[in-house]
Amino acid sequence: MPIEDPAQLRMARAAHGINLEELYDFTGVDKGTVNKYEKGVTKKLWGSTRERLETFFEGALVFLPAQEGVCGVGVQFKPGAKPGGFRLEPASPPPLPVPQSSGAAALLAYWRSRPAEWLSLPREVQDLQLEAVYGFVPEMDPIVTADGVLPAAE
Image 1 (cartoon, rainbow, N blue to C red):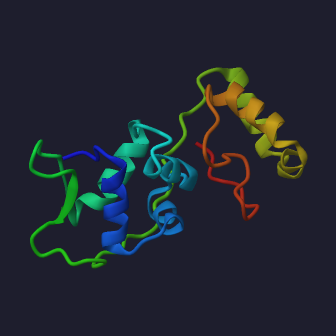
Image 2 (cartoon, one colour):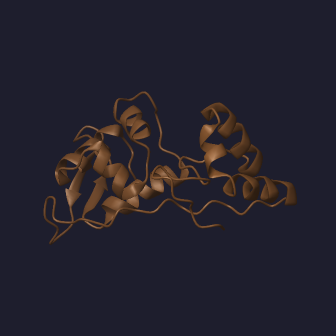
């Protein structure tokens, strides 16, 4: 069953004793996205965000739908699963698409060959450049990672 309600995600995290930081480490889902969803600011989880969260918990939990007049949504451990009894290796972010145009590929190659200059750009300018390459702004920087290491080229 899919995650239908913010309470289910809070229950799943509580059942395994993981905080937002750990959930990010294991799934790559932004902490702010999860926090907004759990607080009801965001009404729905979409696409890969929902998929990554459900995949992470599905090894040990079942998400239970509400039963009108009986009970609300919930989570239940699968037979043999233990609370907090699983740990996965931190997830690597999904691969970014390969730029389809030669101009986008050239722009990406240009900045990958100049990481110091890339890091000196204001974040807004970086976002505009990334949107020109990918058509969206990826959650993780595909030019230079937080520790200054260049990611592998596509």
